[in-house]
Image 1: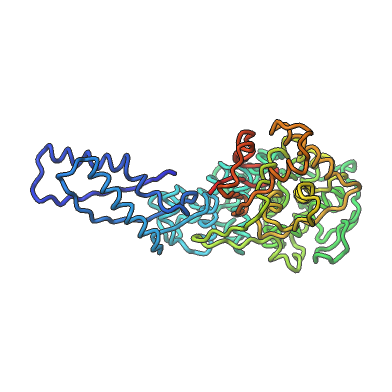
Image 2: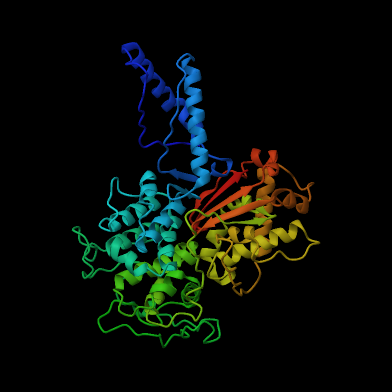
Length: 529
């Protein structure tokens, strides 16, 4: 727990004018209050311990008994502050703002500013997300958004994408781009793509000018092969494996595209990319809030469309940056930007922005399943999916979803199948509990049992147990834990009950925070309480 006090003002009203020694005593009392008693006084209630709580002001009228020792005076002063803070937090109102986490605060800033609501600027400023002393008349909205984006970049790919998703879900992505600037959008896209493991190069000849972007300059972010493809680069893909009209998107084949590029355009030639790219693009078009909200604008600047298409891919399938299919999927999404969005596109994958004072959580009995996430990377599953789409399909999320359900089935072989929307199962594939489960992708053979075997073998090694412990007992003891899942896009908190603490799991480091997992597309944290 940490407490930051922006300004502390003390006004004394002594009965007599204090002499030099008395003044030094008063100064010492203030110093001891500042250094020792304030943090204890302002830690808030137990429910606030793992939250960011912003308290705008706290006025305390406290009388001192100067006959007491200094330690007793400071302790009494601290208690008075604690009582005042407790009352202020309980009363709530406009002077108290609670955020689930820093990502939640950034998301609140973005959605509120885009809606012309700056009433919580004082709280954002406390968290260093709003320019110090910044005006609240709209003149620094762009600066505030860029500050939030820079703060998100420091945490990795998922927080950056989450801010764009929040703007898209609010229906204000066009204003977001206008305020933050197309140059900033291109820059954060490049950084997000690189941090997810992808390869991005900006040609110096077409990079944004150093003086900034005026919205008219022509440049191309090289999120796909630059220039027209050669004949050797033009395999004719098969049609997407989905009935035409199933999502409202036109079928894609090797000879047609919904909208051909204009003459002289640097958009990819229709039919340039293979089946894996087309299937990945279809998946993103169905699931992406960004795509549904904005990429249906035929007049959008090509550079902005490419940046948003790349972020849409990272939103739906973070591990796709590692695959050879990703540049083709980005190109196909740009080519589809004037196509009609899915009939339910406004809802597909959308996550409503939570109120700044609310924290929604979902209960699960399988909270320990998330302990296995680091093991998924350790056994190399994300890399295998990226390099073998014929066996695993074009996306990692469906594989992780199936793996989570298979692991639980092994833990309780006599039970029925786990619900596909169990909060722990969805979190295992990087989705908040209010999202739709990923649709399974048909593959030639089922690789999930092999992957489950690898995870179990790695779990045995971490726990230092051999085959004498039955797999069923091992998985049940590890995964069957009561927990609450609290999530924003790009951020998942798993709050486990205190009686679910396991010495074996702690000794093996299974409940250490995984942090940012680029291949999963989010930050994952474990909490007990």
